[in-house]
Image (cartoon, rainbow, N blue to C red; front, side):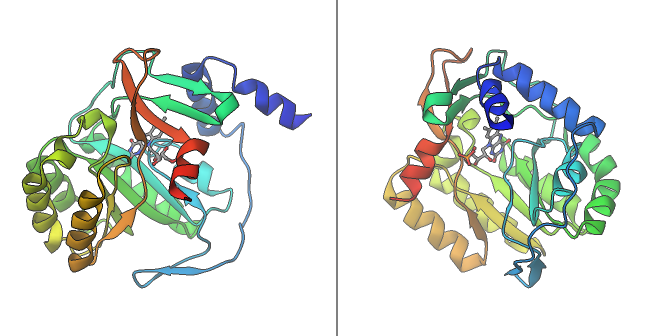
Length: 254
Ligand SMILES: Cc1cc2nc3c(=O)[nH]c(=O)nc-3n(C[C@H](O)[C@H](O)[C@H](O)COP(=O)(O)O)c2cc1C
């Protein structure tokens, strides 16, 4: 019965379900408490209680983190957070393909902005510490300066890791197509004292992956595989978006 109801949710307007589920989780009406599976793994010297976690994009501003992680997951990625507040793209910005277990989104990196986020960060971290959750903060910058500014400001807060989102379809390729620019960013962030992950794009040439793996490997950065696959989508206001779900899982498991 519950499975049938959950399947029906797929056919409701996506922005409605996105917003409603956020409100329900945030209010605590929907709350699932579990200690989670004990299946410890080590990430750069820190122990996670298990390797299950949440990628960036669901809890963009950190309002859901403690509710979601009380379900017992080992890590959560909050963000992507942008330096300035952003509303994101006009609606419609999500199209679902329930039959394919897939969706295309072009949220356009909506964010309440870095200043607002940082003002709430100590209390977010406090709550997540009690749940023994590994916390990754995803940053999205529109220039090297923006990334560096946010990264430097995060020093001293005690986040477990920072993820550099260089692969959002919203950038329309700027980080990925210009290796000089991306190389400068990756060299620039080397001095950050904490764990760094670089979130890889999908659908780019193999030479790019070789190059970025080499750059990240030399500097001890982790890789997050992967962001959504950029695709045309006439059902979305801006005409394109990023594909996620089962089709990209199939692509990665080949
Ligand atoms: C609605 C939505 C919003 C997302 N927002 C972000 C984001 O802000 N930053 C980011 O790095 N990835 C974002 N992603 C990408 C996911 O973190 C993930 O990399 C992608 O969906 C592929 O994994 P999946 O097929 O398991 O969903 C978003 C994905 C979705 C569906």
